[in-house]
Length: 354
Image 1 (tube, rainbow, N blue to C red):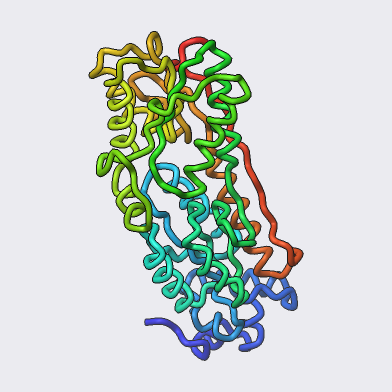
Image 2 (cartoon, one colour; image 1 turned 180 degrees about the horizontal axis):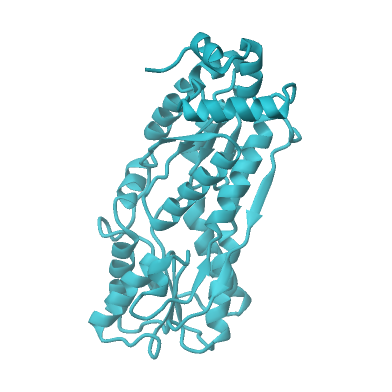
């Protein structure tokens, strides 16, 4: 049975005021008293009622997370990083799952607001459909940090510069002598995906190399012509990156002419492409160079270890929590703070030459 404050002050032999100051971390209590009270509270296995404290302080000491829209190793690592960084700051995390649609995002936001979270973290992929909901949060002065820029929304944001990352990935292949380069992405119209393609195209244009559109696999197994709208986005997210990479690479390998190198949207997509290459009798890296993105464990232990871009998920978590807690505490300027982080090239065997 939980102890009441009346029972606690009797057992601890302190006043209600002293107990309150210890629980709230007030400096207006002697160190020896604080240590004694905390030691006794631990012995009694006392857990403060965070909800009750939040009603008094108008702070719940909780942060809400919307998403992620898909479950993959990178998102799992980001969630872990967010949780650990939040715990260090004295906050807990409430997770509201979204499948990436506006309807699911709106439901997640309502759920988080009903829990009186102090701020919200959005795993958004830069879809314009999410903009009205995010703007509503900002209008109601609810601190919001995005994990990717959303067109039409001016809010705090911490993200990895995928445009720059995919430009550097392509430049690495060009530097190895490749001129016939393909691209594996999906057909989402999110900024998250479009920036990958733009980075690839920019590098090809700078090197004065031709982009062969038939070597860009950007649809899904559902519809080789692609699609649009929220229902299409949801269907894309139902397919694993392994499947996307396998299917897209298989289409390209079936053509009369094929590339000598491929830039892949994720490591999982590159592993799918590696499997497709095996089935097509194409040797990696001798006949085909593959480069992925994320640098998770599967990239290191793939049949041919993948050259990839390391995404700093741990740093993302720390930066997001630091930014959000400072925004909650009123320690930031009114203008949104945007941190663009850089991915780092990790060279392994899938591209051959180093």
